Image 1 (tube, rainbow, N blue to C red):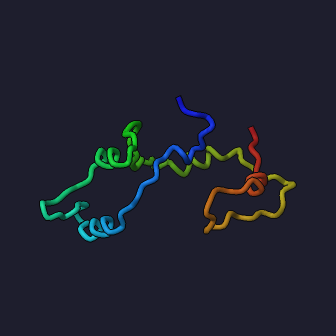
Image 2: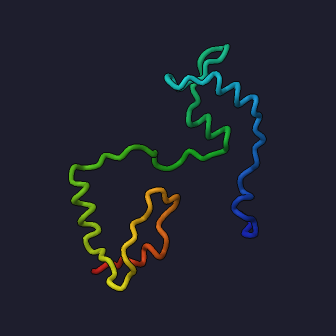
Image 3: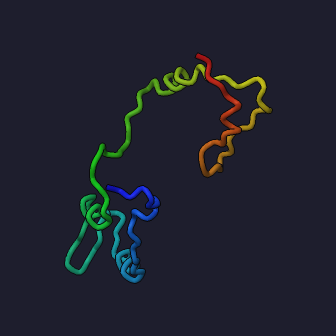
Length: 115
């Protein structure tokens, strides 16, 4: 059972990186074939290889591209049709394009949902 007193960052072991080994592997990587060209032949790392080396679980649904229907714009507009701007809010300020994280609470509070 997990110790509740442990902090989340303590769960991951610390890795000692061998920078010369990483540099050697980088020199042998061929992006056009997604393989390492080694003296003994080509080697392609698989998801299972990475999972075993890093101790990551291979469970759950696969992550990949999702097909989007032709009506995606209409679906999105219908989903947010009930969102209105609060009349008491300050003048509208769009979220900056270079914003590094999600919207602030102040930005979100300028909108309300009518049901």
